[in-house]
Length: 224
Image (cartoon, rainbow, N blue to C red):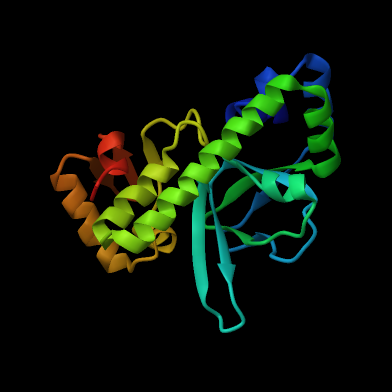
């Protein structure tokens, strides 16, 4: 797939740019195929790019010296992450890991900052993205502290179908039960039980290696 076609499919902000701005993004952005399990960005390294998922699925996670890991969120195709670190000019505060074979775009920090200086539509997009991200993490904190595994799985899946953060996804996502377990922080066996329960309630349909959402609002508010 040509770069322009792939970036237009996975970046809701790209069509907002002027032709000259699009040309610079196309010139400066690198696109790389990443194998499942590969660390794309490491915690503690300088933040040098804005990261987009052209295809596949990645996770954002943190760990400590004892080897304990916590997944913060998953990012499917169409998602972009890392703007906070670039805006603050700080080192990366999390690891970014490919959960499955993925195609990743990297917009250099200098290009990202140039877009901020030269595109009002891009700034509006970014403001909406940041606002939605804050709401996402508040919801995740609530879910982790107050909800049972069924609700955690439901809300984890709802996050992956966020139309603001991941536009154009449709209502079907290729994802395994093991991958859902990584993101929801529950065992694969417990994910299987939760999906069965959510399916019985008409919220989703489980396919081999995929999930189709039937009631996104129901998933978002499950357990409330």
